[in-house]
Length: 135
Image 1 (tube, rainbow, N blue to C red):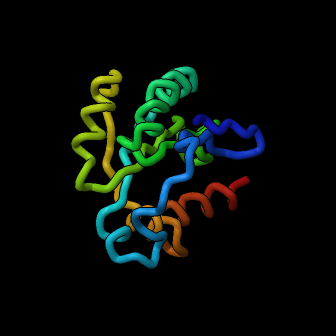
Image 2 (image 1 turned 120 degrees about the vertical axis):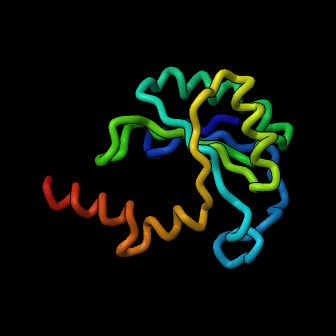
Image 3 (image 1 turned 180 degrees about the vertical axis):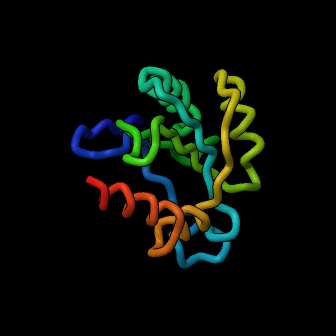
């Protein structure tokens, strides 16, 4: 199910039926060790919207945990980003799905790295703070 709330920065692709949580958020060792996302960047929002429509059945089937894409670039970026979430033990399977849908370039990032990047002193925290200081 695509959740497109215009008040939210992210457009989400989540299962329409609630699923039992397989791993917890932040406090679960296995989550911190294995959970991450494929990052797909594009300057073309229509491309990400179409990719979201194509990913939706895979999310509904449980082959992909969830995904989201940004409505607009972050202040320090010049492109939009889609995050396609999965456990690293399934990341190659998810990459094959993305590849079959025409994605040719991607980056893998663990959630632990994202959390660290947004903590005070982290890479994304510093970049956001620098942009906000200049505006």
